[in-house]
Amino acid sequence: MRNPLRTEAEAFSFVLVVGALFLAVALAAAFGGGRVALAVFLALALGVAAGLYLRGEPKVREPAIWERRPDDGRRRLLVVANETVAGRALRDQIVQRARGGDVDVFVVAPALNSRLRHWTSDEDAARAQAQERLAASLAALDEAGVRARGEIGDDDPLQALEDALRIFGADEIILSTHPPGRSNWLEKGLVDQARDLYDCPITHVVVDIEGERRAARGASDAA
Image 1 (cartoon, rainbow, N blue to C red):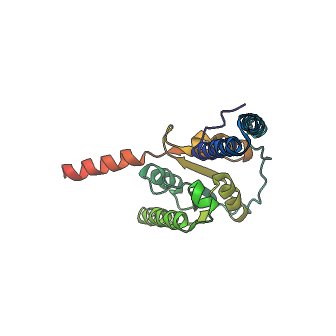
Image 2 (image 1 turned 90 degrees about the horizontal axis):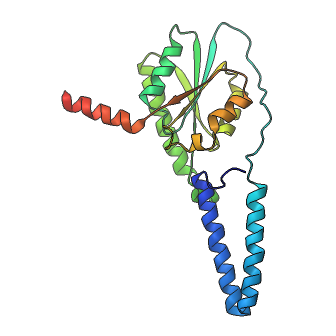
Image 3 (image 1 turned 90 degrees about the vertical axis):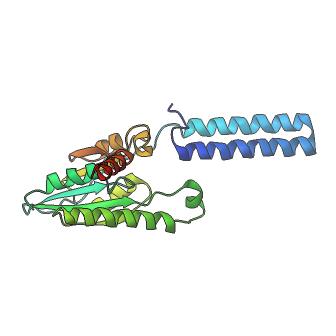
């Protein structure tokens, strides 16, 4: 069974469950005494343990099937990235593949949101931030001579990828993440899951946003 606290969202859910457990025990002790509190604690603890066991394995997804476009001599490159979407390393990879002009590029930026805002259906800020990063990425690609289009995607990157493939039959997929240790997508095994699902080339591009910013400041200071 995998570690149930591999991601920030799962850790947040666990904290809420533990808080509710202690609140229930405290109320049981106040109104029913120690024995009632112990019985409540054991019952809830067993329930939580059973829940973690049942949901311990990641959700199984069937291999995806999507409509391929007719062979018109053009390649279709689908890019999925959120905070790294405007990174130089990702832009360089796209520009390299788009040389020659026979490549259609479609960029998807999932609107990642905090767990609390997701529960309260407050997604406006997440979508606005994703839209801002997407616009910056498309502008940078245009400046580099690559005409691309894009859209905001679902907060689940795999769902965003699946939705995009329904309207853009990609020949190749690029998944962009932060470096290991700083990427929730890598913690969730996004790249491996995508490669299991889609029978087309998938390239993983690591973008160190902080490193790129430091390098840009250094170049500016040197100038």
